[in-house]
Image (tube, one colour):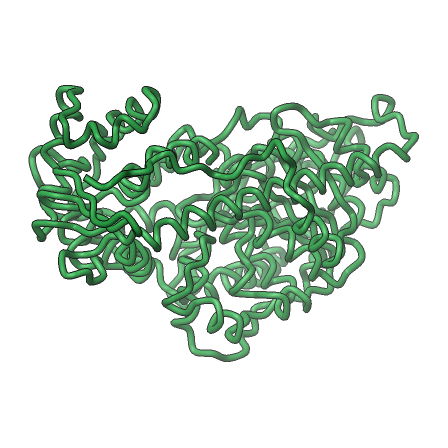
Length: 562
């Protein structure tokens, strides 16, 4: 993200090219008060992309950029996006896609200075169908207007807001890390002499696969159950505490298989299901035109999937010899990531907050929180009190959850059970301050924990899936550093949290201290753990003066009248 901001210093021209891959037709025009109107021909960009030549038209802007920035711009112009017109059509005609295109259309205007929504959508589809494929230059050529006008004022505002947002995030992350280190300094526990929760436990386990069918909702639920084997050597017996894991959108039951296996080795039975309305298979079918897009009912169907799973396991446990007497329904926990994080929060008692959604999902809202694009889809639901909670669930872990608007403070404040929230400092899809750190202050149960992983992204906790086949191919730049340390953090913290708050084994509570997080922390994915944070403390962190070393975003493009 910092590289992105640096690239913005090329000027609003490259800013818009980067953020909105589809602008003009023959010329790109913007008004820069008080200097007047400026423009650039598409021919100049095409010549630069294909030949690396800078003519007089582009030279006016290129002279204000560094060689590195120009190289980045040319690389971007040459990039071919290998997506089909069917996929473009499916996405841009979906409710989520239309919201995104409307926002982009506020920045990229037609020649008559109208929202460029329809022009952008049409140009994207036509360019993707062209033999040259979807490139920026080809997209410009397909834009149905001789001139595209960039909303310079709105663009400057977004750049400024983004810069302030990142500064605030960095200040808060630094403040929480400092607090965690200070708390860790008071501990005198030598964790090198303690059992290492990052390594597998003593239990062997078997994997059992089921396909459940909830006829009432026409939902088929693939489920993998990781079941420990009780032996004298393992030191424990059945029935085993039960953990349910809920994946994020466009993911599957393999994304957290590593965590399921680890928990099973510590004597937890783990059920990992797939949500058919938003799993990888459904998104893949949607992309090729064989299924409708995920709709708002996923906000209710996902928690109902898990309630049905628990009901069905309770029923089968009475007669299935592989399950009989092996599942403890008095000790049930849930773990979820992203949309799955929302799912487990609702199961724990959070209510959908339609009042908050109405305030946050105003079409004129310029909030830069990308997760609102998904959260605001819940406004399509009938506003009522959906019975999504399940009293069987006694503790939850939510990784990169989305919740700030769809649940809000009123919804999160109704969760009575112990909660661990996991945040990544570089998560641009579920920003840590709005989606995990501030919601952490709303949790009423004193048994709550905030795990913050520095440099982690929205995808850091997810393992590569053998069945996903790149449904949503994530660029390496969005995956972040090597994810292996993060896997070890989640393994250790999950065992410690569930042993402490689900099974009531106090000897594991020491692992839930900031000092343990510091002990297992590995750069660059440094781990911090907090047990308390008030709204006032968060506000103080937000309002701390920006360090002098943090320079404000500079736009180097300062045109002069021609």
